Amino acid sequence: MDGTLVDTERALLDLWESTAREMGHIFARDVLISTVGTTYADTLSRMAEVYPDAPHDDIRKETSRRFQVLRAAGRVGLRPGAMALLDAVAPARLKLGLCTSTRRASAEATLASVGILDRFASIVCGDEVAAGKPDPAPYLLSAARLGVAPGACLAVEDSPSGARSALAAGMAVAVVPDMIPVPEDVAARATVLSGLSQVFALLSLP
Image (cartoon, rainbow, N blue to C red; front, side, top):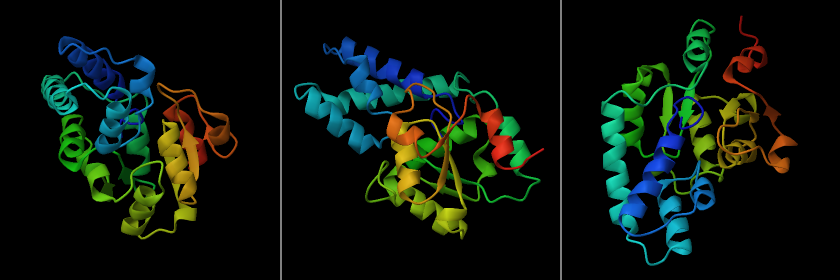
């Protein structure tokens, strides 16, 4: 969802950075970027490891509140080509699942705010699996809920963490990078695309 279909990641990182600064702590941008595609729990664990003295729960709560304000104001939008791709999938009768590291309450609110909550036969969220991306558990659960073998699935991702999760689950993977360049280990096993419009050809969509 984040960074692939919905343009949330830059806003969230900006909010983490600015909120921490206002509370007297400097969070390096590269450290924040390293958490892209991971669950809230993993993000907090990473930040606590690097910045043990920061009030992480307070920063998280205020960041979440500020993001909700942005979302309510209509300042969270879809990534280029996202709606066209979703519109093309529907008549093709392909089973469409969403696999996100975001918690369900926040994920559903974000999807509803951009008008695509009803587009998915299955939604797997970060608070519903024992291990988040890059572990294969989220994508394995997504395939199971769709009733499709992992090897028959195409996962479309933007982050290395998400791509590694889908690859470990045995899926074909297309990566449309957003904030993080595609690392060599992912590029060697996935199809790297410059935009969501290129997914049409992989799915043989008109």
